[in-house]
Image (cartoon, rainbow, N blue to C red):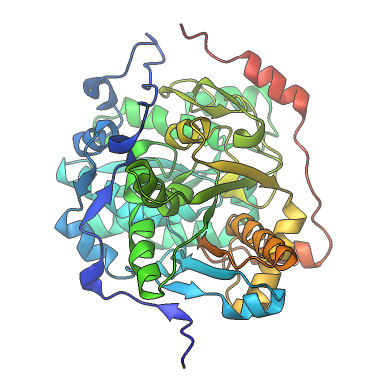
Length: 453
């Protein structure tokens, strides 16, 4: 018992404030623009789809933003989440590295997404909103918003990317169990969905398309707002409870990380674990290598262009400066559905450009192999998205074995794979393959970038 495996914090140590990295940026990020006028967005313009409380957070430069009491009361159902020392994985890898992982799969929905869903549902309820629309890829965000909506008495309508809708029926069942309506996107329920299906009837969908459908409905109904599960500043803000807790837990373990790792699709779970550490460095503290890991089949950070682009396929959402593969790009249907987004969070993109984030990408098969290797050592089967972070952590630990260095690695295990068993069945059955995106499609999508002065 002299070698602890997990580090737990009492409820009283649940963070009272979210950390806003905007306060510490050495250079301010580029402002989001109105897609019609290409002028910086105002709070009044954003009120069409977001509640005022969320808009204030989106635009804030205050370092600490207080977490409302009702939000903390819900979060403490599963927070603070545990930090584990992966001792059995270290032994299996025969590495001198120390591997820690923050486990977000303890939330009721099995992932980190609930951290922001609860906050967004609260702010909408306070302002009298009746219904929320949203998109979801793998279903983790849709599940989280469905749960949060039921807690605060809100109707929830989820547009789920069609390929994931078919791959993950139990995620749909989870959403419906909490009263949400789940629709495969693109659909015939919106104008933009009908246009997409008219052009490509067999379209498998993308997060950009699902966002378009959700935003369209929110903008057309006064009692409805839109909720986003990643990308925008306020979502990344809500996720910083992960890193803030991890810092306290690492102090308990008498450890300081040399590197912090997270998977990236839109950027929320990576920002959640990494931003508090990057913020410490920006304020003069110790520098930690922060590694953002994405799928090779949708490599916005490693292969995308840093430019203003639309957040959705129909080009009705704000224009943001981000790493992008083009709003019309449709990624291949690999199983990490939560990472199939054409763009990266503007804040993550900005910090990457400033040299504070190291992006890398891995193929699908090596990530599933890493996930099984982790599971057989640590007894937790990761979500396909989280497998990307696991792969990077194992890679770094193997490098330590070769060099003899004893580095400390922290990664975010952003969710469990209990709803993703079909993906593992396909992998174990030899049915999965590494998928490549078409460079010609990316080139065509990038050709459609808005011309911003």
